[in-house]
Length: 75
Image (cartoon, rainbow, N blue to C red; front, side, top):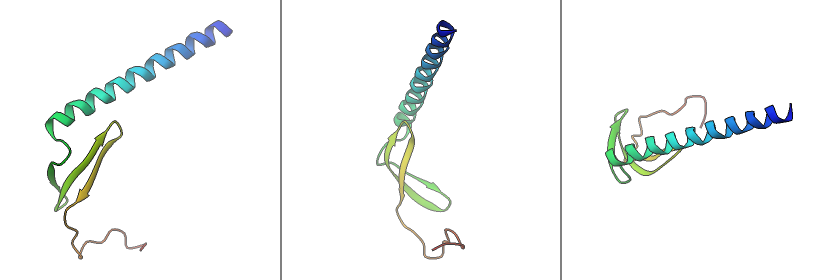
């Protein structure tokens, strides 16, 4: 049983490593297309990319309109 458990752990480790490599490759290809400092439009706002990592993008809207409501149930 112990040997089977160790094999299963190794398979999980290999799968996790492969998933991590795939995410990095995907982010790397995105970085070539658009990068830090680039801008894009979404939802009527112009956004600037501040950072890109394996978890995704960090963006900031260049201008926030006063007529845009984020959530009517909170402040």
